Image: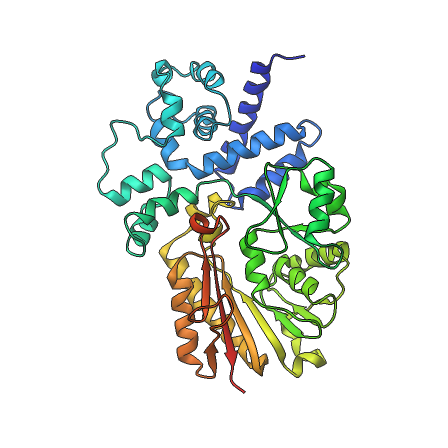
Length: 429
């Protein structure tokens, strides 16, 4: 049996290999890791995969901060050094293991305080920042332009809290499938199997796990008793208040998480038309619906909507879960912040308004349209909503229930969910 120190060093070397590869890959980090783990599934056990994923995401979250510390070493471009610093930044390895491994690189290796500096996000002493925004960008590893932009939107006291919250690991959250089981029943079943779980504080369908679990391998998942879903996403789907017998259009359905939630609330009565420009996503939705025992979701081709008779009569409700920057989901997609640009925000804003306008003619008089993003930026949220209302006087903001002034927000630092913007608009009859 190899010594634990040798096992750890081997794992760090694999993490370094992943980091070197992922730096030149344009796709999402989660997809890269999934493909990598599948390719080496016979060599990497569950513990290996968990550790490698944790180190990779730590490196993505704290990239700029870690780069500044790496420059203190002669081997500053060594991927093994980088992942070692990342593992220390989130206390993935112990101080003792860190000191043993860092000794290979010299320089700062003599400082026993380096581990705590990394963990506490203390910048190297020689760093000269040009502005408070740049200092925050270095400390929390965000593009400087984005910190400068958000500095105009949030208070000086709130901005570092928001940035820090987006670097935290999100809680592991699932949504019970109400077609098959109640939340209390699923909680009891999971506790019988020694999982440490608790009801989500905001979503009546949500359950939170205290630690990371291989959920997709559980019997409960195989039987379709739950879906993995952020609590904020659950609240966004619940805001539609889908009722049995309604005809609903999920315009940008993607993998179908919200469509499945709405179908469950409808108890399979009524119909949900699910569309997406990425048709391959709808194939995943069919599999998920089958596992969940859902049969009132109908994936459709956007270009052939008029061939569906019920569609020609108009929808009771339309959900536009609009494409956006995804800044509200940076806790689980930290690589996305390095792919953002001011031009992308402007593009999303125009695209969002266009999607809503293309969907509106299919909404019945008296029907409701729900506009959702997982963005924190007003350009994709309030500004898009403002433009939609200005162009369409037939729409009136809904102001009852969770909606105030026609919308509500969820924040990672306040609600411990992904960031969401949810607006409800009613079409005049």
